[in-house]
Length: 144
Image (cartoon, rainbow, N blue to C red; front, side, top):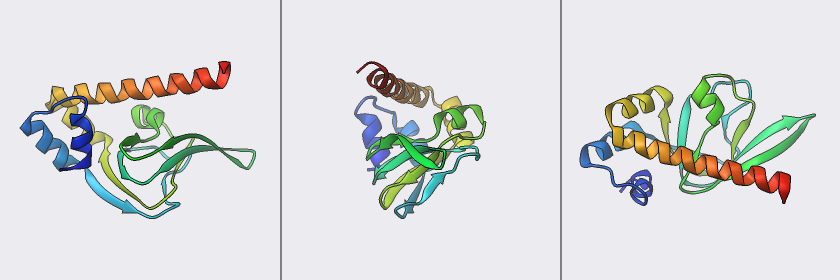
């Protein structure tokens, strides 16, 4: 079974039709270490699911790279602000090792969300998980 569908089933069971739609909408990518999924100034139009490998998000400030997040197997990877707003990204996303990812465009994801409300629920749950991780990083950085 597709690793993304296995992951989704750990917190929500999709029906057969929605599962088939998800499976048919994501494209598998096999990319080498140090490949950049996104560079600052470009608009992020893809959402990735990391099946195997690791990635980091980083900013460049005064010529230095400042890493602000890591992603590992079974994590979604994107520049969420750019992906949602369509504005250019202020970060870079780099693969830290050879990776296998599943990729979907913003337009294809929107089409899935409009057609299958149970997929919309899964994406809401993924956004909630992202928000909680973001808040935890914020609290740890500022108060601990």
